[in-house]
Image 1: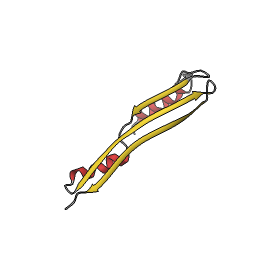
Image 2: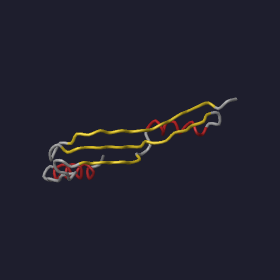
Image 3: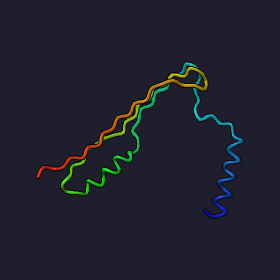
Image 4: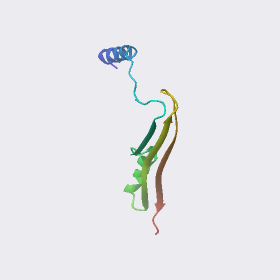
Length: 94
């Protein structure tokens, strides 16, 4: 790591310590819902190696993500998260 990179890292760390920014904006009693499709997992990336081989069949989907949260205060949220994904490797019949 060169000197310029180290200087920029230290400068950013010092500046972030003085910032007062809230990353989420919600108040007590708010309901928050999030639905989404996530980036491929490490498993699916590792399984993609088998796609190049003729004697294996690789199938899969996801990861799908769902989240519900209830803000019990301005700083605390209670909720539930659910994720669904599938990765299957099967040898092809000979």
